[in-house]
Length: 154
Image (cartoon, rainbow, N blue to C red; front, side, top):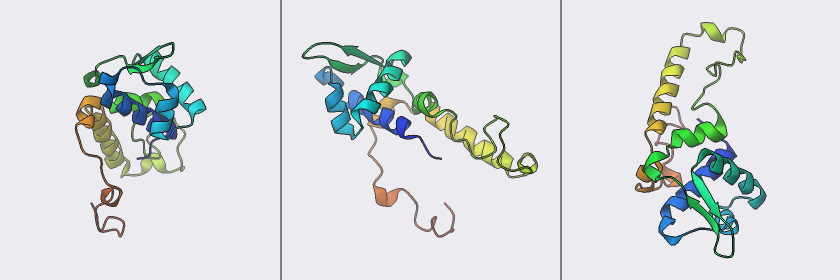
């Protein structure tokens, strides 16, 4: 599964807002700098998040952005759908009718791919920002289990 840059940036910013919610509003410039997000791109993301009701903004010298909903009510699934469309959609399972191969509707493995997609979607729909903020980040050397890259399985 791959998430869009926009989704990645939105999640970064939301986690920053969750972790620093007791500190009050955070400026756009600080959010952009802290999360290594281009400020012009972040402006569009923040507008979308305001429309969703996830963030609120205040104007003025001490203004900025705050989380507008409890982090227990925002899920990773919601964010991924908002900014990236379908959750975990392998080729040929988008439902758009735009199949990648002429034989793809007859591929027997599509059932397994659909089940994997549905399990990933369910998992992300249950992953609230509050719960995720309480976990340790995955180190880059631990993102793929040993042997998986060599074809040994998961």
